Image (cartoon, rainbow, N blue to C red; front, top):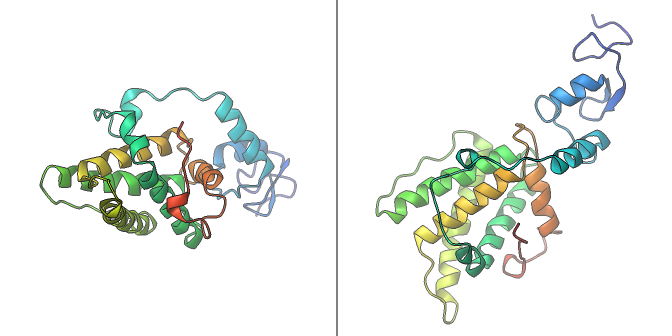
Length: 217
């Protein structure tokens, strides 16, 4: 039985912070260590907002080997040339998030990386697909795969446009995976990158993807 006046998580320290994820007061240490790990923190929690602000101000650059697909190189020009495709991918993520509220940055990174691997094999003339085992990441994988195929069709129908190649989709997905990795803190329940996407698509249910634009870092 938990003693009164102690944190319900550690059962040791004095509770000081109201936790909206648990609906009760917990200690500052558990707030810091369990935030976005065992606690599914809502985005409007004041302690979460303050923590994200601090992390952003003290963020260290990723080491090259920590970035997704560290050996892959491509010109930034390709990203800007296919900005409408990048916008459709971002829009697809938010549309999926609207249906699956439990979607996290980790799910996004897993799905995008898996689809990038699929397009890596396609660009070499081989078809090999390994969708994520996690059901949420798998659902997003399917949504992004459909988005990529639709983008190939739309780009081929644009006057004067060249056909979108599988290797170009691979590079776009690599860029998206790297952006997701840089803009999150690595905690399993973090939604920092998802929040960034929402600033680029204020109303994902109403804005047409071809009219939206992601502001690249």
